[in-house]
Image 1 (cartoon, one colour):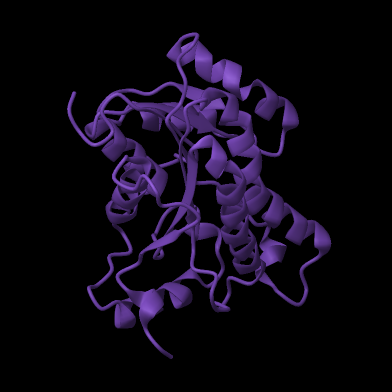
Image 2 (tube, one colour):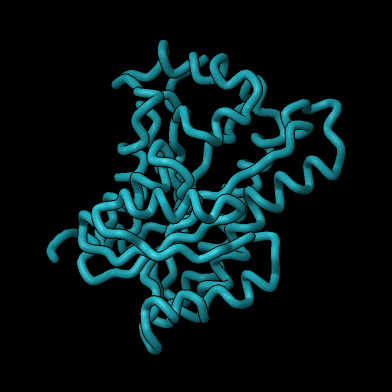
Length: 256
C-alpha cells in the first residue's frame, strides 16, 4: 500500500467515538498505509465497536495510563499483534481527563489537580517510555494539546495540565533525540467530541473560534487535526522535534 505512512506501525490512544481526533488520526494513518493498533480504557467494548468502523479493523489493547502494571505490560501486548521482533514507528497520545473540580480554578483540590496533571501530562512520558523498547530505530511521538499560552475561560486546571503537557513534550524531545525519537504536539481548536461534553462552559470557550479563525473552523470536523497528526508521524518532518503545530484555523496568532 502506498502513502506517507506506508509500512509503518502506529499505536493510537484515545479513540472513543468517530468524532474524536484520535479516530480521524487512526483513519487517515490507515489510508496512508500504516498498520494501526488502538488502546482503550474503561469502555473497551465501545472502543472495539468503533475500531470496526475504520477502513481496516484494528486490534484494541486495554490501557490505563495511571496503572503501572498496564504500562509495564504494554510492549508485550503490542508484540502479540505485530509479531516478535517487529516494533512501532509512531505513537499518538490523545489522553486527557480532569475531574469536575479541576474546572473551578480557585476551589479545586490537589486531588483534582494531581489527577488532571497525571492523566493529561505525565502520561505522555509514561506512555512513551512504555513503548520505547519497541522503537529501537527511533520514531515519532505525537500528542494533542489545547493552546496553553493563555488562560481560557472555564478551562482552569485543565489549562495548567495542558501547559504541563507542552513542557513535557519539550523535555521528551530533548532526552529522546539521541535515540532518533521525535516528540511533537498538535494544538487543535475545539471539537465537539465526547471529551468536550465534560468541559463546563465549552460553548463559551469554543465561541471564540466562530469569530476569530481567519480561515474558519468547524467544531464538528476533527479531520484537519487528524491529518496534522499523520503529517508529524510521517518522514516529512525528519528533523522537527519539541514543536507545537497549530491546527486551529489560525486563532493562536490573533491579537487580543
